[in-house]
Length: 356
Ligand code: SF4
Image (cartoon, rainbow, N blue to C red; front, side, top):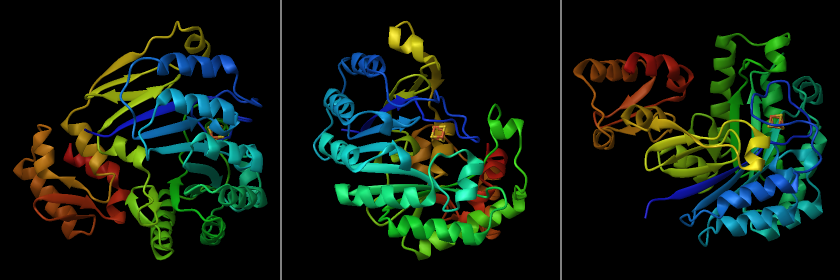
């Protein structure tokens, strides 16, 4: 049977980071039991046993280990399932990490972002670099088989030395998986209202991205998606469901689902979700164009035969465009499979625009 994942959204955070446009309520010290009960209410609907469960946020590490355990039991994962929990370095303790591990979490993912304390303050993060190193050390001691770290690239006044120091911190902390994202100034964020000084230009940001890919690869983290890198065998199974257009069920305000190619989402209204008044909305069908968009994020690329099974077809003009991308170093194209190189990933939007 095809893989299936469950995503549980936890829209609570200690504070709002200045770049963040995720749906989350700042000022939280924990997650109200009424919210956990609402997730449990949804999980009582009959469902397939998932291969992956993902606690995303927000800051899911604000859940107590007992709350996490109850949610995992209700999700009823298959043996050997990947169970991920996102955390911030200053929301965990040795006790909470041991509790999450005991509850069944196999993969802990820390938003580390930078090893520079001045940068962390500028971003509105509430932890320090030393706090991140300590959290990673505690996660290793708690015995998580998978430890993930996020790095943000092209931050204000960014340097390659800042990237190197952050990569060192994650490597020394035993990270098996690293996500490296370019900072984007999203509408509605504090950074959109008060743009920080010293932002790199688009060309400088592209150079930082290419530098990060090369440094991560030489440190043993193989790129498998635009922003994701893993030691062999440590790729994130849950996010691969999204990029391979497999079924996933998202629960909670602002969570998205795609089941049997039908996409749905929950509006971002936490009180409506808790009360049970909120209704999931249908977004449309996942089609060949979505499949192409998702597959070109992955370094494995798009198989044209599989694309055809989704009803997709490349015209002679599109085939010619792909050959030109390959000739200019933006793609590798065998005639049967096309995959973007790191240089192609930098200009992925322009490639997709030309292609679609
Ligand atoms: S970046 Fe993470 S911790 Fe910061 S506000 Fe957004 S969801 Fe919360």
